[in-house]
Structure formats: C-alpha cells, structure tokens
Length: 346
Image (tube, rainbow, N blue to C red; front, side, top):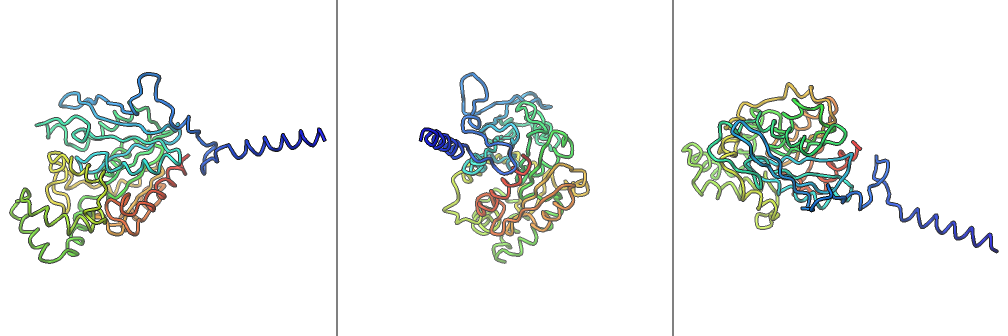
C-alpha cells in the first residue's frame, strides 16, 4: 500500500505541474511568465515604461516620447502612427491583444506629435522624410532594438516611414509590417479619385469647389468630409460611436506637420510627399514583411496585395470589413493577422 500511495502522490504532483505550466505560444521555445513579461526595465523608480529620448536634428536637440509595454527579448514591436502629425493614441487598442501573446510593444510620438516636443517655425529643417528616418534610427538605438527582436509596424504615413527605414536600415530589423499605405504617392492619388466618385455627386461638387478656392479652413469642408468620407473610408463605425482613442488622437493632429508633408486635401497627397514613390525598390526589402489592406480603405487593397509580392519575403492580410482604421473597424481580423505574423518571427 505504501508503494501505491507514493506512486499516486508522485502522479498527482506531475499532473499538477503539467497543468500549472503555461502553454508556450506557437513557434516559441517557452512561454513567458507574467513576472517575465511585466519585468521592470531597470531597478530605478518605475514610470510605466515611459522613456523620453533626446533627438539630434538640423534645428537642434529635441525630446520624443516613447512608452514600453511588456517585455519579450525576442519580439519587440515599435509602432509608427499616421498623419503625419497624429499621435500614438489610436494604437491603444493593441493593449487588449498583444499582451495575451507575450508581445512587447512600444508607443512612440514622432517629433511634432502628441507628448513629444513640438518645435515651431522649423518646417524646412524638420518636416522632411529623411529627417524622420534619422529620428527613427536614433529611437531604435535608444530603445536597444536590433535584428534579433525589432519588428517595425507602420500605419498610414507611418507605413511610408517604415518603408523608408527598411530601405536604409533593414540590417536592424527582424520584421516589417506596412498597414494601410501604398508604396507610391502618385498611385495613391489615382486611387483617391476612384473613392471620390463613390461620394454623393452634390457633396463631391461642393468639396471640389472648396478645394479649388483653397478654402480649407472653411468649416464646411470638414462638415462635408466627416459624415461622407471619413465614415466610409477612414473608420466605418457610426460617428457618434467612434472609439475615444481615435477621437483623442485626431483632436491632437498637428496641422503644420500634416499640411507640410501631406497637403491640405484628403483626396491624395500634395505636400512634400507628393512625388514619393519606392515601388521599384520594394524588391530590396529582404526581411519578412506583412502588408495589410482593407476593402474600404483609402489605399487600394489590391495594390497592397501586389506590394507583398514585390518584397522578397512578403505576406498579405486583407481586412474584408475594414477601412483605413481597420485595427478598429475590422479589429479581430487585423489583430489576429498581425499577431500571427509577429509570432511567426519568434
């Protein structure tokens, strides 16, 4: 009886240990414990993962704001918000998804945006694409990201920045995600005309008149765009139910950065990015790359699919019910597709 009791005790302990051990995520050697995932970054006073990084620019040194969430030495996703001139805040939805898979991620407000410094009167020196790429590289170094763990996630304008970074510094990347951004501003301009024809003809006529008169400060412009264009192609959620982080981010848009780079019109690009095009250079991108498009996006989803065939190691994700903010209006598809891609790099 004693041997039977000992055997049963050992069996019970083995079963308890098996049940209490976290199941490793797919493609992972072992799961991170909660203690490992939420480990402090250092031994000093804890500030919720916030790190302010000094950035050297042609106009002097400024500070940009970042925040780390979680800890995973193999999977670190740095988010690049759109605009240009929006904020990290509309990415806050990933907090409800990435931690459950043990994915570490960083919020980052680019210079001139959100919690970062907002220099005035330095447009020519600061709001230039090469300078933003240089800023991003300084952020990478300060956060200690490298090719063993660094996954860059760029959305909209952030996708432009991500592509340019990959073409210059892809030796530092483990993976690249381009969400809702075409690799050619001229092709984007063409597609914006396709979307324009889907608007009510009277609405489009009035919008065209305002644009022809360069009357973009006219409140009527946004009165027409918001219910007719934004709710069709930007975020397909009833306007009075738009997520608070989206409203908060959009309310902080920096018009100087936006107009300098994008231009004042919502129908294509007319600012400094007007002739930007890296389509022919996509084959230079060797790192695993995911392109994300959406059926009702301001970006042509078929073009996004084509982009995935031009990089050397590409995948494509379509959000069938989504628009430009498909991380919100087709959330389950976007989150699962993005997380599956990130985990495949583990």
